[in-house]
Image 1 (tube, rainbow, N blue to C red):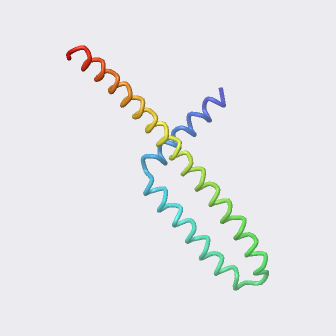
Image 2: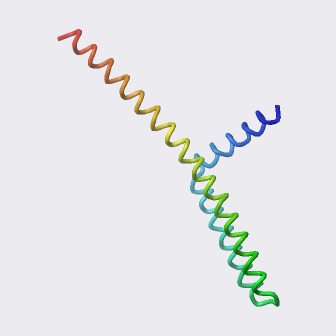
Image 3: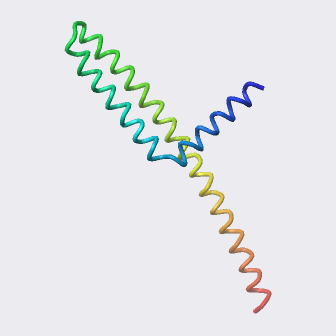
Length: 103
């Protein structure tokens, strides 16, 4: 039962990312900006090498999450394109049959 609930949540997130692309992109840009500001701040402190290491891990993690959002969006777009192609092919077949029938 829990997997179904998780699946429903992920589906909702995927749809949200699909229908709100600009909001998602701006959100990630803000996250990247905050991370860079924190890098500049912490690099002036002691242990700046440690700060750079943490920054790299955080940025890579953020990038990975961003990539997952965009791949989910692309998956929905591919499904919609496939559906449109199938509808087009079906419509063309119907048209051809009607044309043959009435000529």
